[in-house]
Amino acid sequence: METYSFLREFADSWMLLVLFVFFVGIIFWVFRPGGTKKYENPRNIPFRHEDKPAPRSAGNDAEEL
Image 1: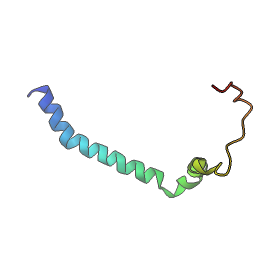
Image 2: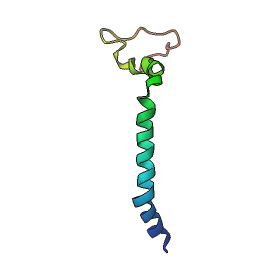
Image 3: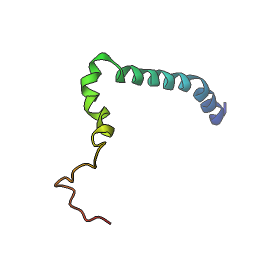
Image 4: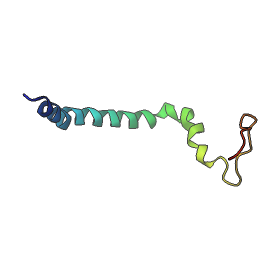
């Protein structure tokens, strides 16, 4: 069997199944009951400074271009 044909058949059948199971596993991992506290801080990052820009930190003293 030609290499391309073998890899094509593998990708169309088994690899599709493997990637689907991986995707479902990631979804279950993120939405598991114990993961709420761990992801609480990162999920609020977009909403931290809605009213005004973030204050300039001490480590961010580079000149603006």
